[in-house]
Amino acid sequence: MAQLELDRLLALEHAGWRSLCESLGGTFYGELMTRDGLFVLVNGATMTRDEIAATLDGMPGWDSFEITDARLIPMSEDVAALVYRASATRGDLPKPFVGLMSSIYRRIDGQPRLALYQQTGIPE
Image 1: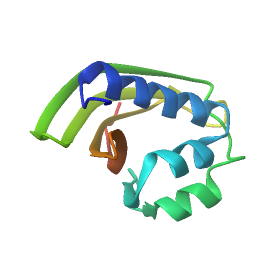
Image 2: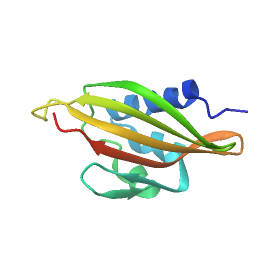
Image 3: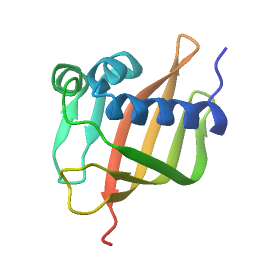
């Protein structure tokens, strides 16, 4: 049974960012998110799993990303939050995107599923 441990959830976050670099985020997050999962983006927009799955594939990919300062906050036996700092670069942006990320995972049928993802921007 997949555990909601720091290393496991951090590996999922890295895989998600790699999918965004490869312009395949819709496919990746469409499979990872819970049916009622939600993204809350730094600009205040929200996106459901279905919206993510329908729109992220083919979007401009990130050139690079870095995840630092990851912390796990256990909430129950089947729920945990992963909080970390991310920075990412893309050629069409004048400066790197830097933010604090919060991802809440639920264990469903033995597997971690992303229920809520929130970005908080950090001004540079």
